[in-house]
Image (tube, rainbow, N blue to C red; front, side):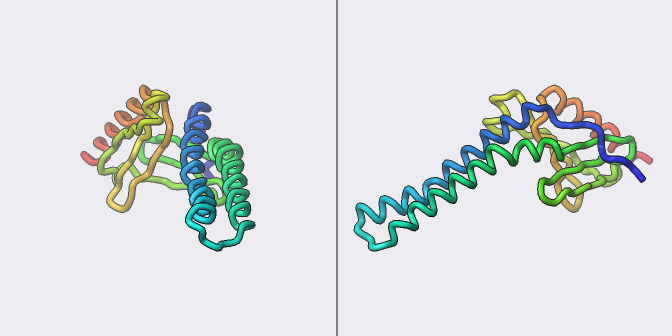
Amino acid sequence: MRGQPQLRLPRKAINVWRLQHAIDTLLLALVPIGYYFAQRYIFLSFYDWLTWWLAGAVVVYGIVRIGIWPLVQWRRFRYEIFDDEIDIQQGVLVVRRTLVPMVRVQHVDTEQGPILRRYKMATVSITTAATTHRIPTLFLNDADSLRDQISKLAAVHEDE
């Protein structure tokens, strides 16, 4: 039986995910804020307690999503590149283990949004005929090296 993959994401991934989740939480906070202003200034007769319940739900969501989730996500995510496959383990509540055969790899990309660009990081996307697998938040040099390594290994298996 094979052990779990050995490579981890950089610890800086936790900060990136926290920033991403903080933005999500702020957008979600617009719901109780909008409800409050609709109730107060448009004179809709809704329940006052619902405003506070919605605000409390957003606060609890923010604490879990920003404070706890990224750390657990970082601890669980692992990957390893072998000559004939890519082994990815991920998940927080449900841990999923994926083996991607090199012969199935169609192309490999690196992606970088504004937050990852700020931290000089990127995500490696591995596309097969069925789906796209991601190794998120690697330092840019590591992501480029990993992309090139997977591309070469996939090309070798394509030639066979």
